Image 1 (spheres, rainbow, N blue to C red):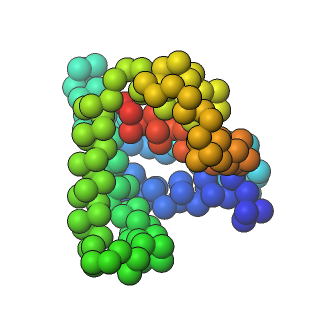
Image 2: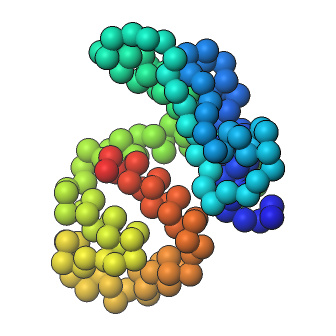
Length: 180
């Protein structure tokens, strides 16, 4: 059971809930909450159903929800920075000719994402998403014949072998990074 996508999602949810539970304006509800905290029932999906409790006008409500969700997202990023630190130490640290601190890596990564988002054309974005969706639209890419390069073929082989749930998560991450 621990090696299933369900367990991974439930574990992620349980890591995120403390950031949410401190906000008294939200109430946790729904099937996942019942299954995690009241009954031990299997589920095919793991999600967070939140209800915003204050009875404000629509505009105030939407502003407050947006503010709270931004706060939650920031907390989650801070929480998972530790995961990045572990990954950094286990897979990168010591491999470069000159030492590169984690903080510098994170800073550069954010700048690269920002620059790429600014510089990508719509066709390049569409191509990247089509590739990640395993149905590349080669005509959108500015370099003709790229589909014949060994590294590109290998990447597609790996995408096709990827676990469906993991693929869904990585696709969602790419969509988020590209702003789609």
